[in-house]
Structures are given as C-alpha cells and as structure tokens.
Length: 249
Ligand code: ADP
Ligand code: MG
Image (cartoon, rainbow, N blue to C red):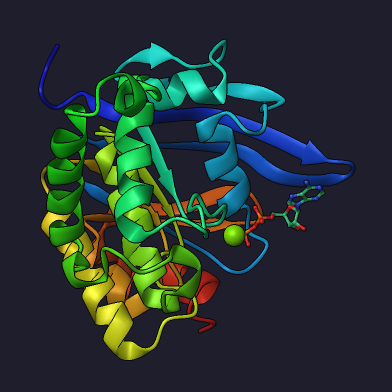
C-alpha cells in the first residue's frame, strides 16, 4: 500500500431528508497525517457528512472507505474498531466519573477487556499510568480527580480528546471542537490539534476560521450538500468561490 493513499475516502455520498438533499454527491479524502478542514455555512451538511462517515446515518448512495476498505457493510462500532475516532457533538464522557476514570474506561473499551480490573487488580496500575499519559497530552493532569460533569466546558472538550485518542484511532473526525470556547480555551485546543499533525488523518469541521487557517493543510467548502472547493489552505484564503460561499463576499 502506497504511503500517499488516503486514510479516509468519501465517495459520492448522497443523503436526503424528505425533499432536502443534505448530501448531494460529496467526494473528498483525508490523507494520513493531514488535517483536512471542512467549512461551510450552518445547515450545509457538515454534521450529516460526519454521521455518515462514522456509520450513524446510512447514505442513500455512495461509499466511505477507511484505509482503502469499503465501510458500507460496517456498523459504527466496527468502524471505531477499524480506527475511526470521533469526538464532540455527542459527548462521550461519563459525568459522574472523574477525568482519569473516563480515560481508563476508554482504554478498557479499546482492549475489549471491561472486566480486567475486577479480574486482575494489578492491571489497575497499567491503565492508570496509560490514562495519565493521555491526560498529560491534553494538559489535564491536575484535573485527574475532577468529575467530568463539574469541569469547565473547555476542559471537558480536552478530556473528550484524551478519551478519543486513548482508543488509538487512525482517522479522527472532529465536529466543531472550538464551539462555545473563549479565546484562551480555543488557543489551547488549537495547540493540542496542532500537536496531532502528522500522526492522524484528521477531518476537522470548524467555524473558527483563525483555527482553521492555523491548522488545516487542505480545506473543503461545503454548501447545500456539495463540495464547491477543495484545495490547500493558502489557496482557500484567496479563492473567490470560497470567499463568496463562506465569507459572504
Ligand atoms: P451543518 O452541520 O453543516 O450545520 P447538518 O448536517 O446538521 O448541517 O444539516 C444539514 C441539513 O440537513 C440541515 O438543513 C438540517 O436541518 C438537515 N437535517 C440534518 N439532520 C436531519 C434529520 N435527522 N432529519 C431531517 N433533517 C435533517
Ligand atoms: Mg453541524
């Protein structure tokens, strides 16, 4: 398999809700190590695209490929096992558990060994050490014993990243990771996402254009369920189609 083969391919996805075409022939790909941002106005079909990639919504037509393999027959949990990670939109956190416990749960679900800790309490240390490393990666070591439900919004989102990363995904789908964040929290998330560059194939849906231009290698613009532009971020800045469709010029 060639190194340049895309980690994720979306091939001609169509999805209607009644008369509304939420996806009207969407084709794009995300290369290994790349951050590919998908931008577009509200209602353009970005979240519907992500739901079809993860297998939560079935397309009417079209295909999703991970590592070159068709996902059409694979349910969402199988796609997750094959390396598809998703964050935000649906919160994956258990509010009554601590930050550390949330990451431990994620590690256990990856190994499929939910009862390890009961069977073999000595495993405890292994999971806790690994979870602490992930908390460190997202800057939450000090909050390890905080209940997820009592953490600040930005911290919960950092924790969701740790939970997603602990499952060791190859492809990460991020639906508006900066939503509802202040400038300081946004900057932290941007730094975290930047540190992921080169390690994961990331499809990033985001409205914060400062973050998009800071992070994206390529940008696709989605309008009414259609990709109207795909290209390098540098080109997107000045492309007239992008400016017209998205920046309202
Ligand atoms: P975005 O994430 O770009 O804001 P969405 O993918 O959430 O857009 O929605 C695209 C369009 O599809 C919107 O017009 C939305 O109202 C519609 N839509 C999304 N999900 C459903 C659904 N389950 N049933 C009916 N219409 C939906
Ligand atoms: Mg959305």
